[in-house]
Image (cartoon, rainbow, N blue to C red; front, side):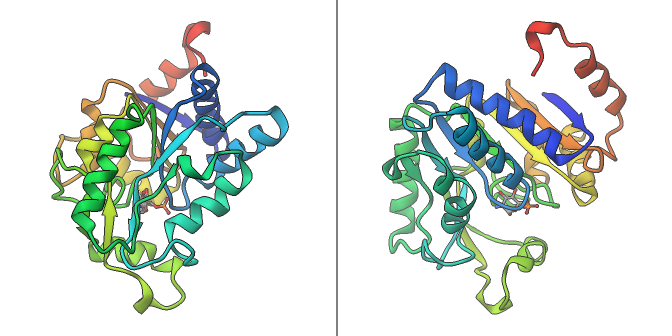
Length: 260
Ligand code: GLP
């Protein structure tokens, strides 16, 4: 795991965008796994800028989103489908048929989830998976106690996650309690993982996930078992790491060929 601590979310997102851009330039038909929430917004803004100003070409890229609320149609203002179009897809040249987002209104949830898994395999697997983290350590919507081998499926949100995400819903009764999410096993099959976390409310989860024991009670801790993870943090999210001095030293002393 490479833990990179930057002064601001903007600085961290610029590094994340450069890693993704290099991936797409090296392999134009890359498969990206994408996340929602407030955390990746600046990353997506930077990718849109790179597309407009530097010609970063998404025409052969395929994407798979982590999750979606059950019961929200794609054009619902709080659906993750709408979020992705507003924050990324409408600003880049990705063909619509290459975008995959779980269908929150499918009437066959198990069938849809099995097909989503198969679609990822048929696309050649995910090259880079972008992840945020919940304050309880969830990734995607894999809440604490999720099997660390889980696949795409329905999950029930915890009261804590419902409270964290209530800010996006004007009417609390409109907030779904169920979601479709890629599983932890699905996420772990990605070739590379980019986790982003910003703000002091993520500091505890980041410290527990990066430096604590691997446990399904802290789903993000499974990333310790992945061979290629970058964790991009601002100072606040890094605030509770015990070995932050070491991560900073590693970053500041990288050989030129390894710099981001
Ligand atoms: C939701 C999403 C996660 C995201 C998390 C954190 O639960 N399903 O993918 O990482 O929220 O959200 P935020 O980035 O808004 O803090």
